[in-house]
Image (tube, rainbow, N blue to C red; front, side):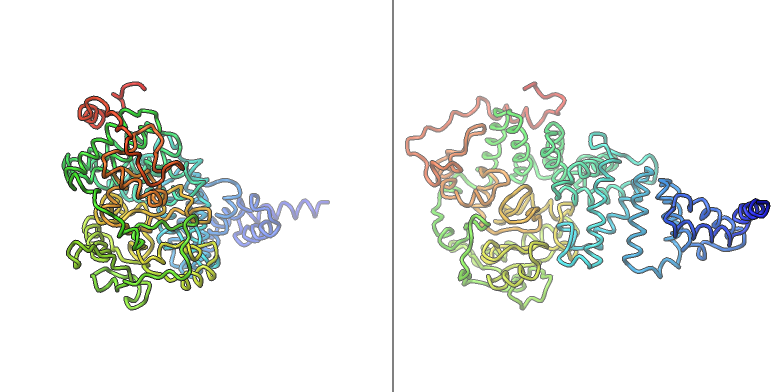
Length: 572
């Protein structure tokens, strides 16, 4: 009995004063899967070894192990400190990419749980960059790839951001230089845009994007393009969550910012008018929505001419320029365009060898205009040039034409994962679709180039084929912000002006109806069923259908709507 007491006393003293004993006890408890008890001895071993002269480089492997134990104890701040110091050493360079990513992921989560959002968003934003194309849908075709692992780690972190950030009360750094806060905002924007593309990511997206918006609006101003750009990502998130007042505020601020740059009579304001109209319609504010719609038509009439849709468009339909393509509108296996040309010949930057079929596009030239400029590749080159200049980002053609056979092979290799649709339902088979790269990976909603495409693509004949919430493609997440489809300038203008919001395939399917109504000046009225989308009338307007009376003082209503702030809005 005396010997046992003596041994216990000696052991307790040893583990407190002898580094080797403390380390042995740490190893023993770790092996026994008792990390919470082990953490105490691990910390003691670190202190004793440091006192004995070991530096951080030598202690780094043990620090990583002790950090794991502290995470089990929910000592997140201490775990984060250990992980940060250990990963900053040269010895950590010996870790494999996956092992290092695992520890960085732990650091990011510990940082979130200890209130250090800036460190977490910096780590996960770097993961997004390393994930590349695998971040487009939260995973890759080969789940063993490190890039897919990065995307998976970011995706799993959504619940931590959801719990840490109040989506109704944006987070703002309490300290830090201006540059550091703007860097945090940029990281938040990238992550928020990533989560906004996921069905389960709305709350994480709202928390991150609203925080990024607050930082940029305070440091840069509401009229700065980096602030405006967030509107196109955060606004739809708010709308989807039912926060329509917040979406309205964002769209009004963006409208005024772009109005200062482009002028009050620019049709380029149409994007924000369209977004505001959609919010007002959801709120049941039909008179205000109608006034905005009429204002946009006046802008289009003045910019593009009163008879812009009166011409016969049978040629576009006959040559499939306006043909819908989706799982509801399949292409036959034998379909192949006859006017493919090399994109590189029209000065379009290509992400792959310019000699392969995938770097070809349809010419789709206008017969009544200059064939050197009035065609698909020339207009895409102009759009890319404009957006490259405005964004400062590298923009290139990622994918153009793909035959039915090529699509079949790609889909067989990738299956339901990745970014390849089944054969027969891909617009790439028409030669009219262009997947766009930004900085050597798929375009993302957080890119400045995306804002430029959203604002300007319609002027060059392009529309976004697969917007958020569509059901055009199989799979859980068919949203493709990188996929732009050529439909011709007049059709793209009509879609912006009078088409159903975020329903491009339905619009193309009912295009003859929209063209006839537009040519006759009879547009769908806000708050009423869109006759072009109804089953009763797909292509024609009744000859004796009376035009709906316009709201009184349209110009006055429009000025009141666009010049007011949400706080001054009249009750509905």
